[in-house]
Amino acid sequence: MSATPGLVLPDFPWDSLVPFADRARAHPDGIVDLSIGSPVDPTPAVIRDAVVAATDAHSYPATSGTGELRESIAAWFARRRGVIGLTAANTLPTIGSKELIAGLPLWLGLGAGDVVVFPTTAYPTYAIGAALAGATAVASDDPAQWPAETRLVWLNSPGNPDGRVLSVAELRAAVERARELGAVVVDDECYAELAWDAPYAGAPTPSILDPAVIGDSRHLVLAVYSLSKQSNLAGYRAGFVAGCSDLIAGLLAVRKHLGLIPPAPVQAAMTAALGDDAHVAKQRERYRARRSVLREALEAAGFRIDHSEAGLYLWATRGDDAWTTVAEMAELGILCAPGTYYGAGAGEHVRFAVTATDERIGAAATRLATSSN
Image (cartoon, rainbow, N blue to C red; front, side, top):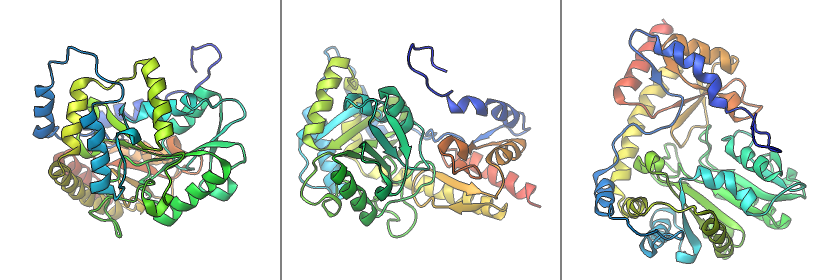
């Protein structure tokens, strides 16, 4: 419960995992924490060098980001996502992506009577953002079912927790329905560089800003991105939003009032990260290897992996209640996240992150093999 007058939020879900984490830590060989997708590998040198060079940050940075950063965002979209024609007016850096996701309904002026739609299996911050604005949160994957009162639609491709990738046709159908409703539509795309299965294996997944999706108009369409995953920058809080220039201008005006400014050294780090594809390819291969080891072990232990064609997670089930599986894994010293955190229909799934070291992933595989014998 929130202590803020007039605002009631649910308990932070991860707090309920604490007893299981304690049990997993008691394993003789220590915990294998696969519950949260926090990077464990070093931040690439090309990025750290850029930060070092920018440490004389005596002046206030621009809320809009440096011109170089905004141009690098546009160039990255063209080079990696097939989205051409973006300019600085179509881009804006953010302090990671979660603060934007949580704040967007409020900053768009949504309130009582307005509906925010988000995926049925989803990261909980979409619903929290609706609650902060006093809007109604509706979980729905079917555009035909979106209420007439819908003013904001969240898509998440590749999805967290399930790794589902929306096709160009599915993205287009969502955009078309949002346009019928006059709603803003935003795709949270932060795992786009981490695709594993055909047809996107080794290449970025489709962006909502692709002309094949939106045609020749970006009106009321945005894409949100984070460098935490692809560049090991979770501790830097480095994200951005791109798309409709009118929406970007409005968000910039709000953020100026609120003082939501990425620090100057972080802006330099983002510029360096967006200009270097080599470190992303190297990190992708690390995750590919870990994912392969963990997936094989989980399937041998009787799990079915659903979706998970992209992203940093394996969305798994053995047909049991999620908390039963969490408890069983904790006995093996493995911590995973229950599907109940991500939607009412996910009660039999758990999420395993592949963001652990090679050694810890190997330890998990060994424990799973021992348990299934």
